[in-house]
Image 1 (tube, rainbow, N blue to C red):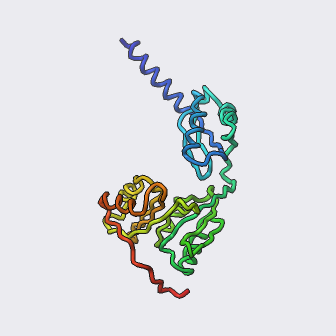
Image 2: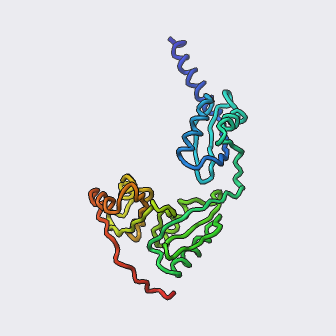
Image 3: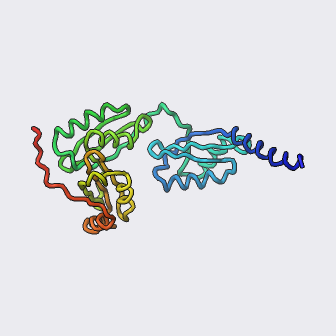
Length: 249
């Protein structure tokens, strides 16, 4: 009986010993730009039975790979990615400058003073490279070092200083909405509800200002259909009155 009890105990110790000996490797994959690319990278890596959990960062184009050194090694992992052609990898350098750029639509950025306030605060973020304004279209273009900051950190700051950014693209298929919300609905739950609507690409709610900004594909959903979907979800979103800027320009 004691021998039978020792068998599963030995098995558990062996498994935990192997888990404790797991190594990690972080690589840069320049061709990996989105979740679909990430899925292809994951499929390639899973061909190696020694590869364990994967952690993706699409801004940095990195994958943190846990692997069992008893079954595989770094050279084998690099070879798997090399064989894909597009997703070749190199070692990740945390000191490298990884420049990224993207646009943010900010409907509550009304004048030059608004932009000056925004740019002054953004330049205080470590890793900020440049900020350019397009006031007539209510958007800014931001360049930053993805090894020092992130889109999430930048958006958080913009929300904190009183603005409500959402993703901006130059495509004619993209449109935007800016709403006011009741205080009790200016929360993450409402954000997730709206993001689940077909055709919606991005949602951001400023929980302090009680405002909501939306980016949507107008070839997938019309403005009227989007407003109806929001209303049908029980969200009491209203369009703001035309803004009259009281600040001196």
